[in-house]
Image 1 (cartoon, helix red, strand yellow):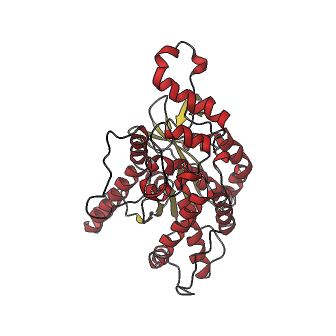
Image 2 (cartoon, helix red, strand yellow; image 1 turned 60 degrees about the vertical axis):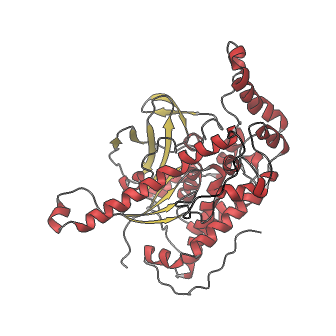
Image 3 (cartoon, rainbow, N blue to C red; image 1 turned 90 degrees about the vertical axis):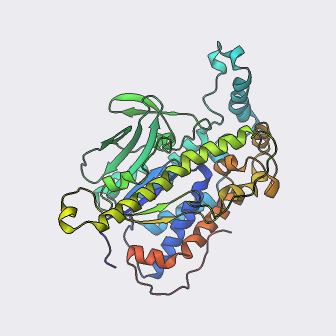
Length: 407
């Protein structure tokens, strides 16, 4: 297969679930080395949303050494703790989560005292500190000017205007695109863009960003993101690798569930977050595949009369439900956080756990993230042939690539 010029990487959102992406990237790096390729950046165009925006930025800022960038991501995600992402100590929980729940229950009595109104369930100030230490955004312009990278796109959702906005930094001046409720803006990517894109609704506070000279409040980029693959294509990708944060297709048949009264707030919140983070990607992939199938039926002259072009896509997504994986590790959350979440229906561990869909986004603990990394590795290595074909790499060493992440 002839390698295409530009390969785009799509990293979607999902809080702690983004550790799965790192496992996929680690496997890709292994397969790439086994194919005898040790230099260059396999992804000239990188687009990230939510926690995927953070991974995307780290890759982009080290585009001159893909293997080192992936190794750095593995180190971070294998050893991450909740306290590095949001305040989970008793005082921090009281200042945000406890106040938030109080406002939900008796807010009518406290509405006049604005100082009592928290902005979110959790305080993610530690995440800002972590990003400023670990993401070397000062290198991004050099990566672009030296040709190691063509473009980085980070998406956010404006609470102020209701628009979905893609901020991008590119090697050359590109014409921004505008679609219904979606627009693109060329601007230097900052830590604030990463915080905005990863601000899970209700869970983390909104971030103020400049949008064409006007300040607007932004939240998680997965909200109202109807076309997650679109930014990479607009920025010149001719084929795209999409790494999901949830199962793209459920097994046939009905999934057994326990019915025990009205669903808890945690169950409803988890269901809503899954809708925000997972559904749009599956729909966009199906839409792209339908367009490719339609274009394949056109005659050559008809091809010339349309601006549409076929985009090869490879999707790698978890082979098991991350809710179930999170359920096995809910007990690793800090005690103060477990106590607060218990009040909205998060309880237990393992098969009898409840609220695990919600905790799958919040479980920034090694016991969980290392399992996600291992799952990403094994899922990708199981599709070694698809990966080799997609990139046009030669299978120099055969199937002897081994899973090595996790300690």
